[in-house]
Length: 290
Image 1 (cartoon, rainbow, N blue to C red):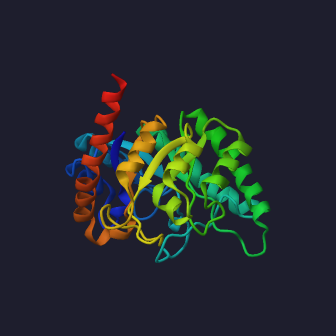
Image 2 (cartoon, rainbow, N blue to C red):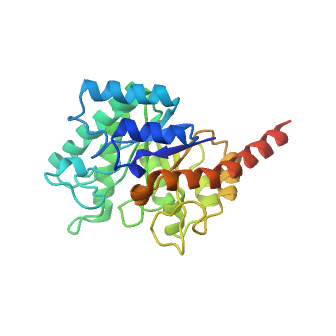
């Protein structure tokens, strides 16, 4: 396991600058925000791609994930907070197609950068649509998206989130089993699991073998607000032990979009809190394997 950081915590800087800043803080990987103001499919140019690739090479960072969870870039005026529509679960096929095309472009970016996966969300339940029907639309979209992603060697991780159509690991596990495609798994957000009143260890065990990326943030009082690790209630060493027990060997990506106004300070403090705890678990695991 290695630590990465999402550029959605550095949205006040251009994407190449964000990548270099994250690399300077000691992280091994970076998650690319595939939304405004960073990488926007359809708007990003060949020069943008070269600048991003240079920044990755200069910083020595691997790409942990392409974050295609939100879609602010698809609105004429950027909303003040994250939005999920047009979603992959919308009842309107034209709306779903618009988000699928966006997601296909994110898959292409992931393949170009060597990222193992993209992450997506279900979107919110629609007022006039039964959740079961929305879940069917989402499953259909995921089947098509996974077929496309698999051609480029990219996986698709669904991120469960409080208030969305898929908000628990149980719903996500059922969805993975329903779609039944080897490219489909979880972008497991530990804080979201806690907000959904799920124990991280149980969630990791339930999704073991289908976790493509892990999001980390601290949470206080089960309130869905991303805090710098060390500011809340999450026992990160226990989380790392559970991931190790599940043979997870991917990235643990810190996601602090709430801290863009203090980006480097928050990212630095997160690394200081998490790195020794992760190292202790990795060493403990290594000794046990001898």
